[in-house]
Image (cartoon, rainbow, N blue to C red; front, side):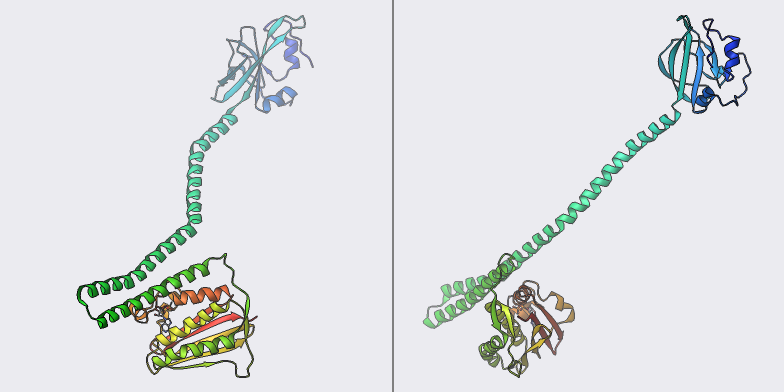
Length: 383
Ligand code: ADP
């Protein structure tokens, strides 16, 4: 099917007959139902029209020519709204007669409405989406940074608390020593008064020494890089030694103190640092003696359960309120600020004990009834 273009800018009857979908300006055009290739192109959203050499519409294909714009400036490419307001992109191609002379032009148009809608949506997305995404990313980063900083804040707060508590603990003996020295310098002149002053200073000095030793030990224990010595320790012997060492303290406080190790003579062994294990059990027994009034009982028992050794320290002392039990192991914590101070305790004893137990793979548990007594249990894995 090849219509011959003979007269420039004119459609011959021959061409009209061959192109059923061709529609001339003065015609009333019927929709083409032949489904010809040209009509198929039109159905896909394209417009086809023939223009003369001045760019005026001569005929259209599949549409009425009046609905399509002419192209008087003979623009090779341009975008224009067709009647009905739809934007179309037009492309102009020259048509030649068989002789090679110019006949006119074929103008092909494609609807760009969908593309424009797509671009509008993209613009909206960019205008609102980018700030929204930035806010979202900013918020998420802020939240994640806060989360990552949490442990740092916590350890910083712990460090501050420790420094404040340590300074507070050190201040009391130093102030006492200062006051003693000042009053002695001002008033005393006898040898007896000097001895009294020196004894008071020695006591305070002793307290300072213990406090600094405890702080040093705790810092060393909590330093993860220090591994503990792995010697074989016989718990029966440790408890017997402690009984011997702490009996005078219990007697001075008029407390009935007794220790029970397994009766059948079986020995419980564990691996670790003997000095630290000694310190761990001694801290709990000393507390039991210190917080038990005169005529009370302190009983230490050693038993084995499954693969654990359990050292139980029981007293009939003043007891601890249930709500205080979880805080006992915090550094410098005292149930009642002055009750610990009277015993000369610094509030580091249980903190040290728990750190040692944990370093040896064990734990400490406690139960207590206010006014009736307390029971501390040290669980340690057997060798
Ligand atoms: P401290 O050196 O002051 O004794 P600890 O860390 O050993 O410090 O104990 C913390 C606090 O727990 C003590 O101040 C005391 O109030 C309480 N406490 C510990 N053991 C006992 C006990 N057996 N009976 C009553 N209170 C206790």
